[in-house]
Length: 121
Image (tube, rainbow, N blue to C red; front, side, top):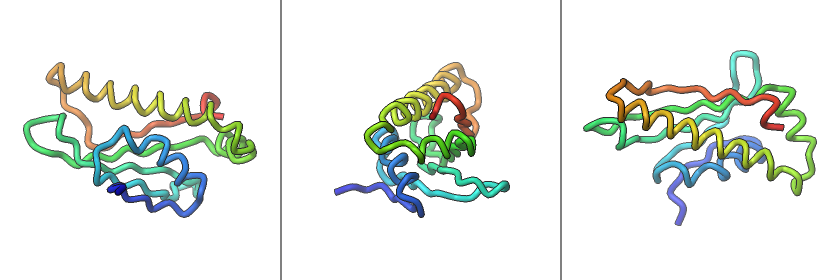
C-alpha cells in the first residue's frame, strides 16, 4: 500500500513525482501547481524528523525551466531515463545539503526551491 499523496494534473509531473517519492517519508504530498508565470511547478510537502528535536513541515518546490520542460515532454518515454536520473540526483543532493546544514548547527529553511534547466533535458 502506497501512502504518498499524488495531486498532479499532468501525467508527466505524476511520473516525476514517482521518480523521487522514495526519497521522502510516507505521508508526503506531491502536487503540481502553477508558478506566477504559469509554468507548472512540482511541490513536495513532507514532515521532516531529522532537522531538529521536533517534526517540521518542509516544502520543496521543483521548478523546471519552460524550454527544458518542453524538451522533456517531446522525448519518447523510453528516452526519459536521463532526466529521471538528473532529477533524482539533484533532489538527493539538496536533501543531503539540508542534512549537512542541520549537522553543523545551522538553521534549515522550511521552504527550498530547486531550479532545473539545461541539465534536466
